Length: 399
Figure 1 (cartoon, rainbow, N blue to C red):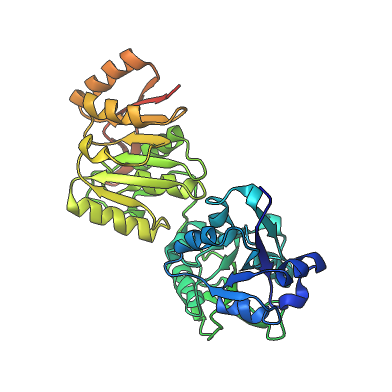
Figure 2 (figure 1 turned 180 degrees about the horizontal axis):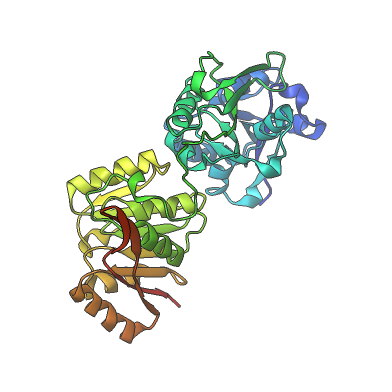
């Protein structure tokens, strides 16, 4: 089937800024779908006009109902870069769609700032939880962020300041490429600009000597988490997450999530990584939710219940961590659901749980290790080694 749907990126320079071939596509459209801003930028073209449907997920049904007509969807900049094109492309066969990219807001912002695109992180909080940008606050990191509205820069300024990055220069760029282009500059700690609702934010992260360091590699300090003492400690957590092998958009089941430390580190370690934490205790679920917000993984899904019953109906995982409630039944249910090449890691601190791991290792193979950590702590006027509880860890890859 030939393409009937054209997804066109449009900038502040409007219809006249499009390439001639793309202008011809828009002029020939029978139906044009977009936001008010997009329609205003192309108002010289006569066609049936449709606004974004509510809820937005109804867009796919709307488009499928227009099949057979010449349809154009207008988007901002590059439709496949944090934009509507990706959502449509997952639902409609690629052979039925032609994309017409325009220069993206990221490219325009990088050009205005004089920043190399290869050396910046590109993020969006548009229609997404704002806290997810926290995971990218790093010393000397440059961020380009698509915002949600006029209030977003001030909220991000607060995140930066609270974490010791208040001296970070911030630049809001609005209406780039149009006659009303505007620029607002300041430091995070003193940000007080009133900016247009549609804007792109550039942040040059500058860390104070007392800044909180939160790298995306696993092994965050224990005191960055709310916890009740029962948690996977920093050194063991680093090994655990490494064995789980976080990958882009992969899903983790964190069984017995507790305060959520492993799930949070998994999500921070790879772009768009997802996690479901299963936890029977309400107080620990509350801590996990608070940690997810504070550490930049607000999309952590938390499920009340105990395995294996609570695993029913969950999406198949790419990795499973069993940090609590270990039993043969929990392993069998988790391993059956695990995708091919999926990783399973189970930690045990009690002799009873260790015995279960020994038996599972004998049956299924994998790697069995004992992790022993000693930390230097004061002993009167001196220092001495204080041992953490040793952890037996079993890991394997499903073949």
